[in-house]
Amino acid sequence: MQFLSFFLSLGLLLIVIIGNGLDSPELHLREATDFPVGVAINPKRLVQAEYAQVVGQEFSSITAENVMKPQYIWAAEREYGFSLGDSIVTFANAHNQQVHGHTLAWHLMQPEWLENSIASYDSATLENLLRDYIQAVVKHYQGKVVSWDVVNEAISSDGKGWRNSVYHQKLGDNYVARFHQYAREADPDVLLFYNDYDVVAKPEKLATILAMVDNFQSRNIPIDGIGMQMHIGLDFSLDKFQYALDEIVKRGLKVHLSEVDIRTNPDGELSSLTAEAAQKQRELMTEIVRRYNQLPQENKFAVTFWGLRDNESWLTKHTGHPQWPLLFSENLDKKPMYQGFLEGLDVNQTKLE
Ligand code: XIL
Image: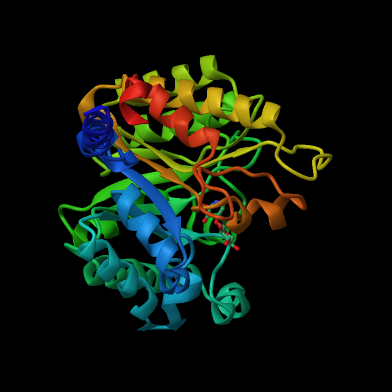
């Protein structure tokens, strides 16, 4: 009799454990948010089954880390190659994800043939070439991407005015506006973003971007949103962040936290991510998501992480040190930063575990 009740209790316990498991399936980022959560990817990595699985499960938006940049698409003067970019669209469609296009024009990562010949073009030739490029690419991806960064990083790094790039030298102050018009002509529906870094860290840069937006809006130049790149460190100012969000929202634009990564190793002193740094990163992530999540629904475009896992981050090369700046570790474990993201949504943690 005692034996029987032991087995009965064991059975009951098992039912409770399994039942609980069924009641609270693992919650992924894309299900936890009312805005798209994105990741920048390299399509070559999608052949790794585990990588593809996490990208598909966790995210509702995809950006090409590189393969939709001119360097990859623009084969020769009026020749374009879309196969790598298309493979991202195919993956996204299969996983019910939106695609954000990055980027139609940038002073960096141009194809080599253009780097070599750009100085020799007169203004009209260069303008026509860029117009044709922008319109061919936007048309190719019409209905396949929801949005484009039209011009990337057109403001100088001190934030005080236009970057002295070859585009600005040859095409003048108004080129960003004209590129927006070209993109709009090619696709009446795609959302057009201006994307830049240090929007929060450099108040002058934010002021210059806002002045550009005001100018565009007063002239009916199409612009739908601002991409704040969010390559940030643990010293990030949440007050300045809130101010930037408010100013962009005041203008009726969408906000894309477009390239989020949080550096933890500014001086390169750490040889592994310490618990303390991971905790600070988690808390900062929480506060960023909390503030973003409080924006009016129509202003929340997406939050996009610039890579899936720490060891693949561009920052290792860019800063010369590992920074552990992303949501997942090398073996695809969720980091404290991942929990921090969920905590910013004010979701009850106990329900998630
Ligand atoms: C970076 C990529 O992550 C690297 O793989 C590439 O070598 C250089 O470009 N701002 C941007 C992104 O808008 O396109 C950059 O991406 C990072 C900085």
